[in-house]
Image (cartoon, rainbow, N blue to C red; front, side, top):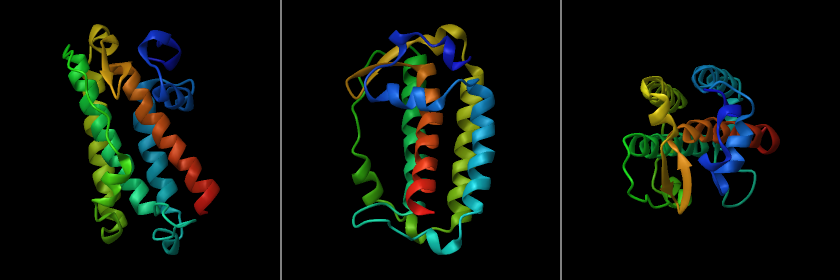
Length: 171
């Protein structure tokens, strides 16, 4: 599915920003391409930058990579629930609490990228398995309506957002 095929009723609230950030893409292709682009991008960051914070209280690059992993897991879980026609409204989560409760800065870069890659492959296989009907099923997450498919574009847009933050504030 291409992002241009999403209906405006398939996403709302803060999710819309990430769907737009994803741009005009094919979801399946971009899930794979963006994985490899991100790994190459991160591997070219100077080693002394991974523990750098551009301001007090801001996350390190390693913490942001862990944040991307955590969020992709949550977004894919939500997509699974909605695609299976689960109508249970899912709560939000406090991203700062998640980052505060990781040991991302103690992990090796290779460990983080290996986990990111494994998770992305799982996400990719999940989205490949969905029928059009499952893809379009809508649920509620963080009080906003969103389809299982739109969450895939959120995953891509969220990653692109943080990659821009790396470029603008860390490098």
